[in-house]
Image 1: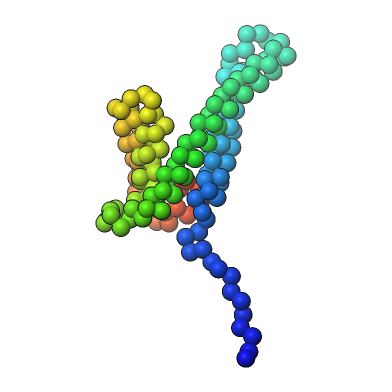
Image 2: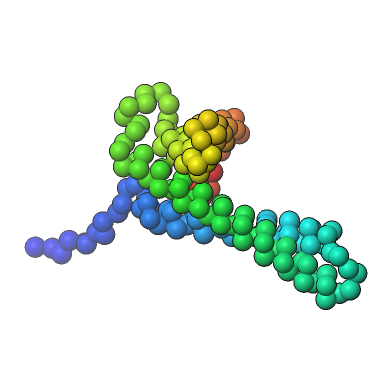
Length: 159
């Protein structure tokens, strides 16, 4: 018999939940550190108590470290929550229950990420944050539909 070629198994769903989570959290953390560091640079130069160079440098480094790490950690943690909720929605196949609302997983992930992140502030704040998260995803989906950009084509979070 003729030798048949060997084919590799191909995952039709794409990357797994953990791989997606690591990618999203890493990109989000780096963007947050960069934006926070730039904000810290501005604040450090604006709020320097002295005109001496060493004092200015110390002020800038302190502000960059404070704001960069804070915003980076917040964005990284939010990306982890989003990725896990989106993976759970895909795993439970929410699209079979939603009918015309497609895709439901990013909307669910945005809602639950906002609600979970602000859960300690109380149910009203958590509901508002969840609504904002779902609105951000829905707004991006609507904008992409109007512009003709394939939804999820950027490979990062819901973009």
